Length: 420
Image (cartoon, rainbow, N blue to C red; front, side, top):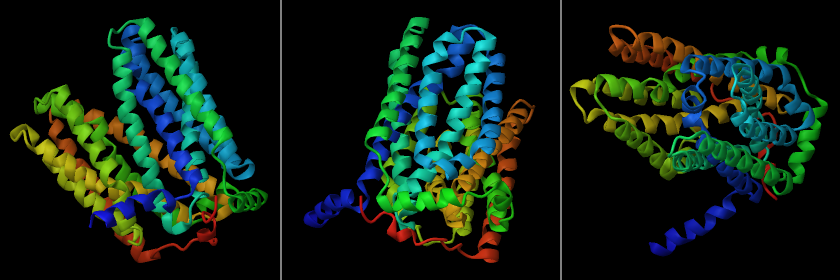
């Protein structure tokens, strides 16, 4: 038994190409850098610099809107010039923005830096996902997304801890060190992408062919299956994101859960993802994508019912986070795989960019709506509302599978990740 476990562990490095492991290392570094700064953005600009939380919130909104518009405008570059080149450019752009944060001490400079940061960080996602999909065969796409997600989760968790230690004193000079260190870590990630992370030769040839045939957004929007999938994803994402946005203030104000316990809940979420995400992704690889979405929605409905009832039973949030994470591990790798399955080779960058825009819009719209409900006299109504949205999204997933079944890949993807 022990020997069998050892053999399985030794086989893991050989299961994926070296380029994917290197990309996972780069993701770990990049998300450590982002994790160092993200939790402290509002604190730094709103309180330490003194711009005020309202202005900082407006800057974050502008960051999101401009980032989405920029991604829509330039996503074709991913298909035309290659995902790796665009990915390197976005990481360099984010590194420069982070390094300039300590200089953005006036409203004008703050908005300019946030616009720059939004453009680079929003375009990062479709560029990174498009590049990653060239490294493995189609049957390993779910595992690939899961592996990268584990690296991201470890980076976010470790970066948040490191960032908290760096700014423990709360002074401007400590925050300057934080942002310079974060920008430097991003630059290291870009350097590794340039020097070490390469596509297999076959993937480069496929990318050259795709670039020669680069299409348009009109072709993407003409794909009814893709449009339906994004409507379903929008509904599910609108509810999915509210664990991060709405659950902490609700639990703190309505259920009396302190910040330390809220932090523990998210630590539990990260730990479960790190341990179980890759095996779960491998197990669900052949499931219907819409059916997987529907099952994730069911888990979230149960979890949100528990969070809504947490003022009356303090144990419920801890049970809810486990159930929520089960749905999350079904949903997250499936979102990327579904888009890749639907996308023609020469339009993959645009398809993934369109999916990235769905994420951004769903996050923004849902955050605005949930904030209005939480600020009302009946904040508990947020959770039934989210459960209804999830129910509609889950039924939409079942309808997607019934209408279209599983989309088939448009190229012999199994050949792309065979050698490194």
